[in-house]
Length: 605
Image 1 (spheres, rainbow, N blue to C red):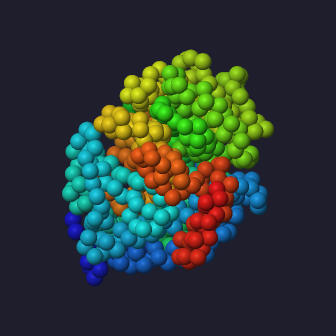
Image 2 (tube, rainbow, N blue to C red):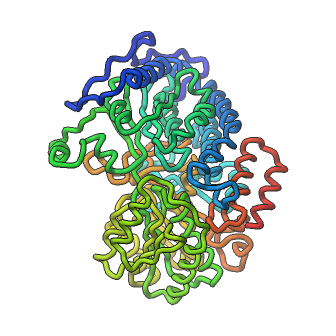
Image 3 (cartoon, helix red, strand yellow):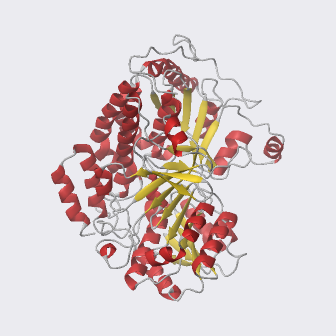
């Protein structure tokens, strides 16, 4: 279907007339609506009613008007960025001089600004009658798959993330031509409303609720009601400022409250779709009810509590596969800091935090690597465990692994299970806290890589993201065997010599579980978000980065070249806070002098 021209008359919406208030929410499949004070119920119903009227206004906007609206939102986000990053740092216990404050710039306003730019580019392409994927290169991958090289797209992309390249892999059998023709999703029929989407926002990364609201608007033509996680309540006024151009016409609304508010809204008759970022248990409570026999019977007989369609991103236990090879001492130190970052960023309160290092027991550099990893993990700046119940989960890990090493004043833990049975808690429990485990497997080369892929696929909980570290010589020697191993790795995001957390902030990659989750067996979730090119039939995204930083990336060994001496998100980057803020301010102001100053700081990382 071709996009509607800018002058197209909106088609009739399937939604209720704007003047009609939504019906009183009814119990869903026998679940009673939660009991509230009248003032709370009225506030929630009013938000739904306002959004219901907004569905008609959104459907009336042309694609070009939507692109201009996102540019207005971008200005508002830029104006709120300093307060946003400051409030997030305070919320997480990071003082004014803490070296890791930069995380809140990159994972907050930076991520949203890049998404707004990418979505606006997609809308402008569709408005001009072009596919968002026009000019995007494609290539064959094992198993009848096609990969679309969706990052970098601009000179700024190549400069800010030098040496990184991202691909979106299509499901087997889908051609590049089909993907280009279908790209745009609901924006290919922009006058048909998708109704109202309820976003049950995450409580750990501040950009997630806003990014999920944008995906509702653009991927599905749904206006969005965002219920913030209580951990984010302090940011409500900042989010309202940032999204003011979307709130005023009724395209987005924010509400606060606990699980009772979420339960009320998931059963609300005015809600057409639910998206949740959270835990599998929360998803199951929404769909099947509290734990116990009733939940089991409902699941076994396919009688969910809600008929409303639902998508979800629910985390998991992420592997870090370390492929043995001729690593130098500098390689060991750099990649040890890389792994420490995967676990310790945001104090380990990430759905994509690396948790299990899969290591070759036969690698001749095994002992040196383990020493480097312990040093990097212990030396990273200390920070509070700020997410609710994190200390409880740390205590759980200490009980399960009494021989584990507790480091950094009790704020992180390193464990090495002695057997496959001992590894079960580590491999099946998403601790959502700084617990890093090392599991050793036999073999080297292709034998080890294949064993590690099989281990990750079959023993680790979830399918959200996996990380693979491999030196250029070893990867070259494996040839097609390496590509086949990556294709066999059943995860929704894969990072090769990178961290999947970096893929999160790249809007032209996709974010979500590997396909296959269902309501009855949801795993790491159902569906995807981000995906600013609005690509259909996605299987996964793959991010590739440099094994060595600048200047070693320009050495005699073939590999990915980069101008980054150390990525600013590394917990060991001495200037990471200043560089992360500087990159965000460059996106806001587009001041080349700001960029030059930021790169000067980056070279002191």
